[in-house]
Image (tube, rainbow, N blue to C red):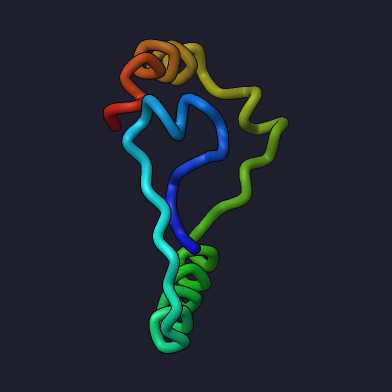
Amino acid sequence: MIGSANLDYRSLRLNVELNLIFYSPAHNAELAQWLEHDFALSLEIDPVVFAQRSFGQKLTESALRPRSPML
């Protein structure tokens, strides 16, 4: 299964989210390859470095937070 839905009221009733179940071994293998590729490109977030974000970055994040469901 792959998707964005969480098992809470907001996700199931208010948000437009979807999960898909793939039964095909070929599709599952392809999805696994995509995920491994994405993981290889990912960077781990260090909590100490994250806490030291600039004031401007934190302000931008706060300003955009109400729009996060649309992003």
